[in-house]
Amino acid sequence: MSEATQDAVTAYWSARAPQFDGVASHVAQRETWREVLAAAFEAEGPQDVVDLGTGTGACALIAASLGHRVRGYDGSDGMLAVARAAAQAMNLDITFEATVIDEAAIEPASADIVTLRNVLWTLERPMDALLQAHRILRPGGLVVVSDGLWSVAPQYRSTYDPTLAARLPLHDGLTEVLMRQMLTDAGFGKALSWQHLFAAPPYPGDVPMFVVTARRP
Image (cartoon, rainbow, N blue to C red; front, side, top):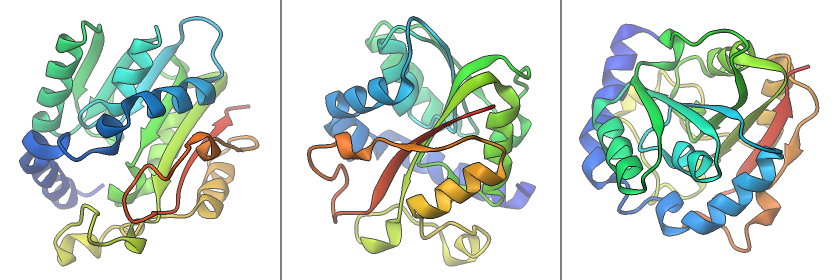
């Protein structure tokens, strides 16, 4: 991501951080998200989990609560401050690092699971995030991606200034069909869907959303 775009994205989320969790789906439906991710992880015993674009720690907090060893990475200090406070309040041991996905110094083949929740639509080069996930996963490791077609319910969505939005190819969101193709292009195996485990749509406006997983061969 270009420096100008990254600075604009980071500033946006840092400004939103103090109020973000007050309206977030992962807070309002924490137990449901926990059940869905627990199933999607298909984990037997503690795993090394990396949460890319962790924000206020939605996936990181759930993964740690499930007993996994978790590292979270995000470019927004404001969002990470909220994530660290939440982890402390929940007595969860999570390592959070302030860095953008492109520059995260993560050892290759050091993770069993990589999560990317509502991240790809915010990126100038979303494929780079999937390639980063592929790089840091061990063979057989699992990527977990959740996102949605946010343009369906614009009144509920986060959005950027039009000039910034024009630089982001997935700003309107994305479909599961596109996500599956992107995972294939990034070198992952067959994708599985998990959004059917939600008893009701997790976002207002009935946004078409997905939770998909795929393994690194």
